[in-house]
Image 1 (tube, rainbow, N blue to C red):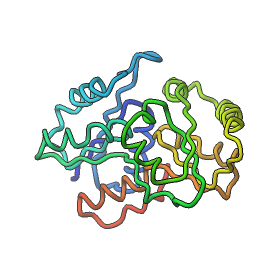
Image 2: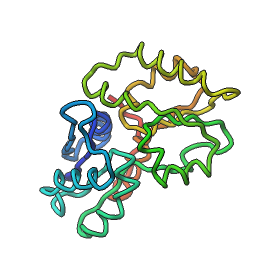
Image 3: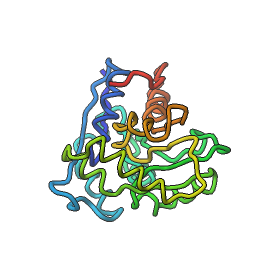
Image 4: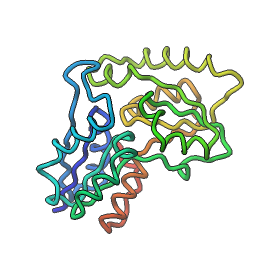
Length: 221
Protein backbone atom coordinates (compact mmCIF):
# COMPACT_ATOMS: atom_id res chain seq x y z
CA UNK A 1 0.00 0.00 0.00
CA UNK A 2 1.18 3.49 -0.85
CA UNK A 3 2.02 5.71 2.09
CA UNK A 4 1.60 9.47 1.75
CA UNK A 5 2.29 12.02 4.46
CA UNK A 6 0.36 15.29 4.49
CA UNK A 7 2.12 17.92 6.58
CA UNK A 8 0.73 21.25 7.73
CA UNK A 9 0.70 23.49 10.79
CA UNK A 10 -3.04 24.16 10.67
CA UNK A 11 -6.46 22.72 9.91
CA UNK A 12 -6.01 23.21 6.16
CA UNK A 13 -3.90 20.06 6.10
CA UNK A 14 -6.82 18.08 7.48
CA UNK A 15 -9.13 19.42 4.76
CA UNK A 16 -6.62 18.51 2.06
CA UNK A 17 -5.94 15.06 3.54
CA UNK A 18 -9.68 14.36 3.56
CA UNK A 19 -9.92 15.05 -0.16
CA UNK A 20 -6.78 13.10 -0.98
CA UNK A 21 -8.08 10.14 1.01
CA UNK A 22 -11.37 10.18 -0.88
CA UNK A 23 -9.57 10.22 -4.24
CA UNK A 24 -6.94 7.65 -3.35
CA UNK A 25 -8.55 5.12 -0.98
CA UNK A 26 -5.89 2.50 -1.74
CA UNK A 27 -3.24 4.65 -0.04
CA UNK A 28 -2.52 5.19 3.63
CA UNK A 29 -2.75 8.93 4.26
CA UNK A 30 -0.65 9.88 7.27
CA UNK A 31 -1.60 13.24 8.75
CA UNK A 32 1.19 15.17 10.44
CA UNK A 33 -0.62 18.30 11.59
CA UNK A 34 1.14 20.60 14.03
CA UNK A 35 -1.21 23.06 15.69
CA UNK A 36 -0.03 26.02 17.78
CA UNK A 37 -0.96 25.61 21.44
CA UNK A 38 -2.27 29.17 21.51
CA UNK A 39 -2.75 32.05 19.09
CA UNK A 40 0.54 33.64 18.15
CA UNK A 41 2.70 30.81 19.49
CA UNK A 42 3.49 29.22 16.13
CA UNK A 43 6.77 29.62 14.22
CA UNK A 44 7.36 33.19 13.06
CA UNK A 45 10.31 32.86 10.69
CA UNK A 46 11.13 30.63 7.75
CA UNK A 47 13.97 28.82 9.51
CA UNK A 48 11.65 28.07 12.45
CA UNK A 49 8.95 26.74 10.15
CA UNK A 50 11.49 24.58 8.33
CA UNK A 51 13.02 23.27 11.56
CA UNK A 52 9.59 22.41 12.97
CA UNK A 53 8.64 20.53 9.81
CA UNK A 54 11.97 18.69 9.68
CA UNK A 55 11.62 17.50 13.27
CA UNK A 56 8.02 16.38 12.78
CA UNK A 57 8.76 14.57 9.53
CA UNK A 58 12.00 12.93 10.67
CA UNK A 59 10.44 9.49 11.24
CA UNK A 60 9.08 9.41 7.67
CA UNK A 61 12.04 10.46 5.50
CA UNK A 62 12.85 7.63 3.11
CA UNK A 63 10.05 5.46 4.50
CA UNK A 64 6.98 6.79 2.67
CA UNK A 65 6.17 7.19 -1.01
CA UNK A 66 5.46 10.91 -0.91
CA UNK A 67 5.42 13.84 1.52
CA UNK A 68 3.08 16.70 0.67
CA UNK A 69 3.40 20.16 2.21
CA UNK A 70 -0.16 21.49 2.50
CA UNK A 71 1.36 24.87 3.25
CA UNK A 72 2.22 27.60 0.75
CA UNK A 73 4.95 29.23 2.79
CA UNK A 74 6.78 25.99 3.57
CA UNK A 75 6.58 24.87 -0.05
CA UNK A 76 7.84 28.18 -1.41
CA UNK A 77 10.73 28.54 1.01
CA UNK A 78 11.80 24.99 1.77
CA UNK A 79 10.70 22.47 -0.87
CA UNK A 80 14.06 22.59 -2.68
CA UNK A 81 15.88 22.40 0.66
CA UNK A 82 14.13 19.15 1.55
CA UNK A 83 14.61 17.71 -1.92
CA UNK A 84 18.35 18.40 -1.82
CA UNK A 85 18.85 17.10 1.71
CA UNK A 86 16.65 14.01 1.48
CA UNK A 87 17.28 12.79 -2.04
CA UNK A 88 15.67 9.39 -1.49
CA UNK A 89 12.35 10.99 -0.52
CA UNK A 90 9.76 12.43 -2.90
CA UNK A 91 8.16 15.76 -2.00
CA UNK A 92 5.56 18.13 -3.39
CA UNK A 93 3.32 20.85 -2.00
CA UNK A 94 1.03 23.82 -2.47
CA UNK A 95 2.56 26.32 -4.86
CA UNK A 96 1.87 29.58 -6.68
CA UNK A 97 1.24 28.56 -10.28
CA UNK A 98 -0.02 31.31 -12.55
CA UNK A 99 -1.23 28.65 -15.00
CA UNK A 100 -4.05 27.82 -12.57
CA UNK A 101 -5.62 31.25 -12.94
CA UNK A 102 -6.86 33.09 -16.02
CA UNK A 103 -4.33 35.91 -16.35
CA UNK A 104 -6.74 38.30 -18.05
CA UNK A 105 -9.35 38.08 -15.32
CA UNK A 106 -9.34 40.29 -12.26
CA UNK A 107 -8.15 38.09 -9.43
CA UNK A 108 -8.54 38.48 -5.70
CA UNK A 109 -6.10 36.56 -3.50
CA UNK A 110 -7.22 35.81 0.06
CA UNK A 111 -4.20 34.89 2.14
CA UNK A 112 -2.09 35.85 5.17
CA UNK A 113 0.66 38.46 5.39
CA UNK A 114 3.67 36.10 5.81
CA UNK A 115 2.83 34.51 2.46
CA UNK A 116 2.71 37.87 0.66
CA UNK A 117 6.26 38.66 1.80
CA UNK A 118 7.65 35.62 0.03
CA UNK A 119 9.50 35.99 -3.28
CA UNK A 120 7.36 33.29 -4.92
CA UNK A 121 4.21 35.29 -4.23
CA UNK A 122 5.75 38.53 -5.49
CA UNK A 123 6.75 36.75 -8.70
CA UNK A 124 3.23 35.33 -9.00
CA UNK A 125 1.71 38.82 -8.78
CA UNK A 126 3.88 39.97 -11.68
CA UNK A 127 2.20 37.38 -13.90
CA UNK A 128 -1.45 37.92 -12.97
CA UNK A 129 -3.78 40.86 -12.40
CA UNK A 130 -4.47 40.43 -8.71
CA UNK A 131 -5.39 42.27 -5.57
CA UNK A 132 -4.60 40.85 -2.14
CA UNK A 133 -6.61 40.66 1.07
CA UNK A 134 -4.80 39.37 4.17
CA UNK A 135 -6.83 37.69 6.90
CA UNK A 136 -4.09 37.04 9.44
CA UNK A 137 -6.44 36.32 12.33
CA UNK A 138 -8.50 33.67 10.53
CA UNK A 139 -6.14 30.66 10.81
CA UNK A 140 -5.87 30.76 14.59
CA UNK A 141 -9.62 31.25 14.96
CA UNK A 142 -10.21 28.34 12.61
CA UNK A 143 -7.86 26.06 14.53
CA UNK A 144 -9.86 26.88 17.66
CA UNK A 145 -13.21 26.44 15.82
CA UNK A 146 -14.07 30.06 16.61
CA UNK A 147 -14.45 31.49 13.11
CA UNK A 148 -18.15 31.60 12.26
CA UNK A 149 -19.47 31.91 8.70
CA UNK A 150 -21.05 35.22 9.66
CA UNK A 151 -17.60 36.48 10.74
CA UNK A 152 -16.14 35.48 7.37
CA UNK A 153 -18.86 37.37 5.52
CA UNK A 154 -18.48 40.46 7.74
CA UNK A 155 -14.66 40.50 7.53
CA UNK A 156 -14.55 40.13 3.76
CA UNK A 157 -17.36 42.62 3.25
CA UNK A 158 -15.38 45.22 5.17
CA UNK A 159 -12.09 44.39 3.42
CA UNK A 160 -13.46 44.48 -0.10
CA UNK A 161 -14.77 48.02 0.46
CA UNK A 162 -11.15 49.18 0.68
CA UNK A 163 -10.46 48.00 -2.86
CA UNK A 164 -12.00 50.57 -5.20
CA UNK A 165 -13.05 49.88 -8.79
CA UNK A 166 -12.37 46.17 -8.47
CA UNK A 167 -14.82 43.39 -9.23
CA UNK A 168 -13.07 40.03 -8.86
CA UNK A 169 -13.79 37.44 -11.51
CA UNK A 170 -11.82 34.74 -9.73
CA UNK A 171 -10.75 34.14 -6.14
CA UNK A 172 -7.48 32.42 -5.25
CA UNK A 173 -7.39 30.98 -1.74
CA UNK A 174 -3.69 31.09 -0.83
CA UNK A 175 -4.20 29.39 2.52
CA UNK A 176 -5.39 25.80 2.75
CA UNK A 177 -7.68 26.48 5.69
CA UNK A 178 -9.74 29.02 3.79
CA UNK A 179 -11.20 26.37 1.45
CA UNK A 180 -13.61 25.48 4.26
CA UNK A 181 -15.48 28.72 3.66
CA UNK A 182 -15.99 28.45 -0.10
CA UNK A 183 -19.81 28.69 0.32
CA UNK A 184 -19.41 31.99 2.16
CA UNK A 185 -17.09 33.32 -0.55
CA UNK A 186 -19.70 32.48 -3.16
CA UNK A 187 -22.36 34.26 -1.11
CA UNK A 188 -20.23 37.40 -1.06
CA UNK A 189 -18.83 37.40 -4.59
CA UNK A 190 -21.54 35.51 -6.50
CA UNK A 191 -21.79 32.04 -7.93
CA UNK A 192 -20.26 33.04 -11.27
CA UNK A 193 -16.93 33.92 -9.66
CA UNK A 194 -14.34 31.18 -10.11
CA UNK A 195 -12.80 30.02 -6.81
CA UNK A 196 -9.39 28.36 -7.00
CA UNK A 197 -7.60 26.56 -4.20
CA UNK A 198 -4.50 24.38 -4.47
CA UNK A 199 -6.13 21.09 -3.55
CA UNK A 200 -6.99 19.81 -7.03
CA UNK A 201 -3.69 20.72 -8.67
CA UNK A 202 -1.63 19.30 -5.81
CA UNK A 203 -3.52 16.00 -6.02
CA UNK A 204 -2.96 15.84 -9.77
CA UNK A 205 0.74 16.51 -9.20
CA UNK A 206 0.89 13.79 -6.54
CA UNK A 207 -0.71 11.31 -8.93
CA UNK A 208 1.86 12.18 -11.60
CA UNK A 209 4.75 11.77 -9.18
CA UNK A 210 3.42 8.38 -8.08
CA UNK A 211 2.61 7.36 -11.69
CA UNK A 212 -1.07 6.88 -10.92
CA UNK A 213 -3.86 7.64 -13.36
CA UNK A 214 -6.65 9.93 -12.22
CA UNK A 215 -6.55 12.62 -9.58
CA UNK A 216 -9.28 14.84 -10.93
CA UNK A 217 -9.78 16.59 -7.60
CA UNK A 218 -13.56 16.44 -7.58
CA UNK A 219 -14.37 14.15 -4.65
CA UNK A 220 -14.62 16.46 -1.69
CA UNK A 221 -15.74 15.57 1.79
